[in-house]
Length: 319
Image 1 (cartoon, one colour):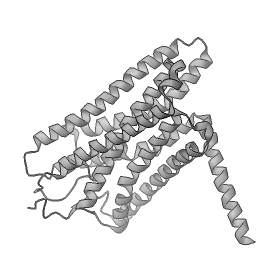
Image 2 (cartoon, helix red, strand yellow):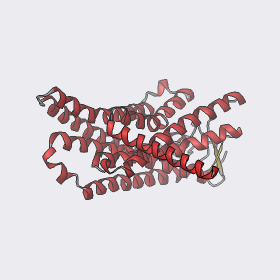
Image 3 (cartoon, rainbow, N blue to C red):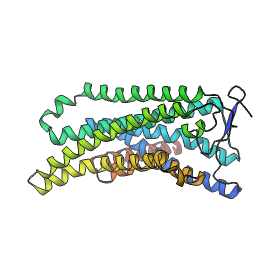
Image 4 (spheres, rainbow, N blue to C red):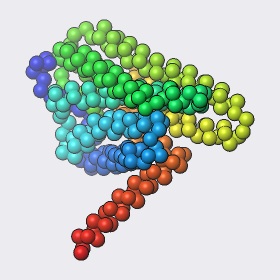
């Protein structure tokens, strides 16, 4: 038996024992990670450099891409490195840092998706007040509030989790440091702490969900009152990407943490964790750029500029 003072590392769940499958896992996750890096990187660059995209909607989208980029970079690189080198270990400090960053970035994403729903609500239901309610200062304050609240929430969860004494070994049944799996290693009566953590998390998530739901009820009512079909289509087009991202994020997170214990198993928990921690950051850029011509044009402009600069550098080297 071990306690928290003697634990120097944790052992993460391996995707496979066979070397060939470990390498397959590495290449699969590498492909997903590169897709997420490219997609979110292009959105961040396009929004930052294209003045036509300097609007509240794209400002919040830039912040969402930062959260996505951070969250997937928190979990995948360590898992890929372990598969590549055939190890499972993560240091005690590394586990604490990974847990903090993941909770921070996921919590920030939840808050930001709520703010983006408010942005769509004002744009469609109160368009005449859009410039007043969502000025540049208001947007910065809302984004800062999302980052700050997520930071404090993550600090609370990390301090709560790692203040527990551990005496159930150091093996985690997950490919990254996740709160429920770490709590299983505690030898103290963790029910009150677990309930406290659950209440805080569920309360924040539920408030976000209710606000988003209320916003979209009002949005759909306003859209259905638009007389022209073209106007309705344009309004729906600005909302559908955000609604798709919200649905993907909430559905996977709810199933991961509120599924019945009777159907829980290490393999299912692993698949579900991949669904809510890896899939959304990789798919969000695709969802947002698929039906958004402005964003696609800006991204293509960035790609052309990068290609032109690369070609120019190659030509100058040959000379």
